[in-house]
Length: 177
Ligand SMILES: NC(=O)c1ccc[n+]([C@@H]2O[C@H](COP(=O)([O-])OP(=O)(O)OC[C@H]3O[C@@H](n4cnc5c(N)ncnc54)[C@H](OP(=O)(O)O)[C@@H]3O)[C@@H](O)[C@H]2O)c1
Image (cartoon, rainbow, N blue to C red):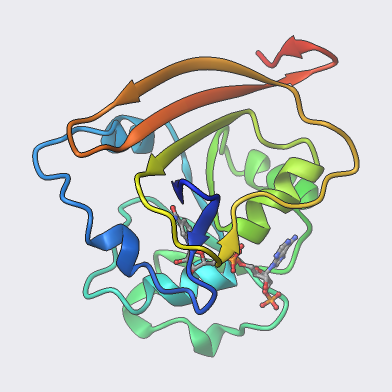
């Protein structure tokens, strides 16, 4: 996740202009390596609706969109074989995807990540701090019913000013396997 230094993933209206204007040409932030490590993506309706505004669909891997309100008619024709909707809760969804052979998912979207964190379903977090303050917006993190202990794995900084840190969640004080 890309996060402004003051903790936001998008402006309040979902605008990502502050992120898109970053000059990062030629830098390898590890995105391709990370994408190769997952079986697919799980995203919330908010993130899906934003990606639909992009010129091109950016994902090669299957995408599951979590929503209680979208229906199949909200999926553009060209994406029907790439995108599936789910109304399941996070634990049920991971169980179902596990039965289909998924071992690791890229979970995307602020509210969705918060929901997966509360359910103890996040093992790795990569936060890329963007060198900008935007004052207000959609927060990456939110309320929890318990602390989530994290092990810091690595931090890399880039000439553009991006600083990317990887964390692994700890269960019962121990890093997850
Ligand atoms: N900076 C970054 O790296 C980054 C990454 C991803 C997204 N974004 C931006 O973040 C914005 C979207 O984030 P967001 O936090 O507003 O939305 P989100 O997490 O993408 O989607 C939230 C929606 O998902 C649905 N949902 C279904 N099950 C849920 C559950 N168990 N928990 C929570 N939500 C559930 C709900 O919609 P229904 O009412 O349809 O059920 C909910 O409103 C977009 O502007 C996107 O561009 C930024």
